[in-house]
Amino acid sequence: MFLRSHGRKKDGKDHTYWSLVETVRTPDGPRQKTLCYLGELNSSAQARWLTTVEVFNAQGETQQLKLFPSHVEPPPDDPQVARVLLNKVRLERTRQFGSCFLGLELWRRLELDRFFEQAVDGDAADVPWSRVTAMLAINRLCAPGSELAIEQRWYPSTALDDLLEIDEGKINDTRLYRCLDRILPHKTKLERHLKNRYGELFGAEFDVLLYDLTSTYVEGAAEKNPMVRRGYSRDHRPDCEQLVIALIVNNEGFPFSYETFNGNRTDVSTMETILRMVERKYGKARRIWVFDRGIVSEDNLAAIRKRGGQYLTGTPRSQMKQFEAELLKEDWTRVRPEVEIRKVAIPQGEETYILCRTSGRKEKEKAIRSRFSNSMEAALKALEKTIAAGRLKDRHKMERRLGKIQARHPQVNDLYDVELKETAEGVRLFWEIKEDRKNWRESREGAYLLRTNLKAETAEELWAKYMQLTEAEASFRALKSELSVRPLFHQLEPRVKAHVMIAFLGYALWVTLKHLLKRRPAAVAKPSATVVENAQPMTPLKAIALLSTLQSADIVLPTTDGREIRLRRITEPTTEQKSVLRQLGISLREHLHLHRECSADSAIA
View 1: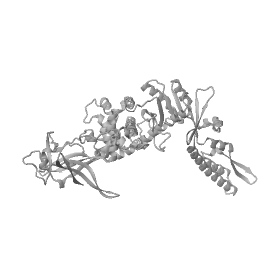
View 2: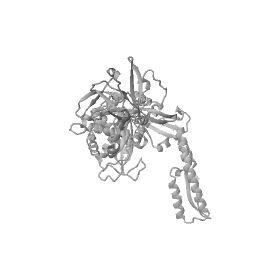
View 3: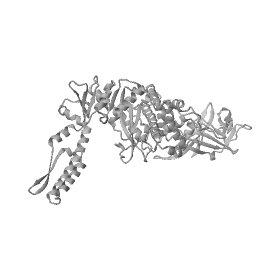
View 4: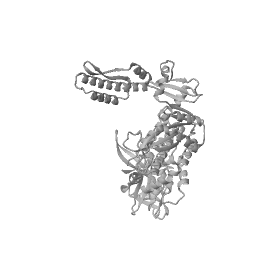
């Protein structure tokens, strides 16, 4: 790392500017990478045209200094002169800046800073609780970790103390835990605030609501938390107690509300609670609910109809049997190259059923059936051969072996008629495929059934609306993967709920970033910028990773009189980083505050 000079002629005068660079290896050989621009170091003949830097001491007193290389003679008797030892310039306090700065800008764009200032900053504190909340949410967006990990590893490596103006040594895990306790009572107001902000920023509407559930598991016994129970684990961790999370989003993935349930709560039993909760928070309205077959029951559908609501839902596969004749018809409507649908009206009924079939799904289910069928037939043939050879004579052992085979293949067990019969040679195993059952299985492969009380829309529109459930699934993927809502390390119920609330805040930032990145670059870029048509928008994960390499650091300038001047700068953004910041409508801050004696609070290059 070293200083590099750049010459420039301005107003008929020669100027020399300096940048801090480092040598990096590239496929094309060693190259010099600019970390940041230092600005201009004066020469005596140019001093009256050149800018100065503002320096302040421990008492907060400021003065203007002109920086000169130590080998250049400055103007005589000028108290503003500081001669810099170029060969001793160094870089200190390198910290993550870009991703944290992005998170804070998203936080402010949602006006969450003002919301939490009003909600939790009523009492005097060393650090305003609204800023601690911002830190927790930004961590969940950028580098999810426990409160202990935030204190010991993540926060010290970031520039959040500068961005949030938090004094050194004020953040510890106890303060973070206390913050969780303070924000939880404001859950309902927070949901309403976000709903309004998404409407203002993106024109988001919430007349169509997508509802789904997931689970997260807890590490430890959590004996003092009555909510965590053993139940159906979507995380494939049946050994751990868990918590069920219900999430409601609109058709673009913007969060509407969320709720937590006991870990052993079944999906189908949550709908009535959610309906009452939504009415309590937002009043009665004619909403359209979209959810999958795991939440369907006649009681739930009746409850929606009773409230004047409408629904579009998947159905259990068992209901497709009554539409077997419809499956065999040829007049299907192709809505995509791989998707066909048929609208089936029930005589004298208030509902409409939509039969759908997908070629890719059909091939997948056929492959699964073939794999299990081949495995079961091989096992049956082996057992049949063993019995016929006389190596297995005890009928009870035969039945146990047969039971194990059937238990290992529940997906296709109903396709086979299997029986142990007495013959002249002794007990023998007989089995055959049920052709009618096999034909029915083949005809329904790749097919699924939708059910709705919506009347005015076409089958294609109904299918497209149901496919919006992928937004709810994407929300859960973000919560579980990018935002790491699992596992839970808290043992108390309020702390667990507050952890989910922080994950919800992280998702609010994440989905805001997602939709900002979806905007066409032409709407925010300079007119001369080249726009690639049909280009895929950058994902939030990639944008965060890209900006995470943007850092802040102190350039330390030792002087000939024994002082050290510190310029707190941000590393020079790459072309791609500048493009992303421009698309998001974000400008880098002009100053980072630096509270040290004889330091420069310098403008960012």
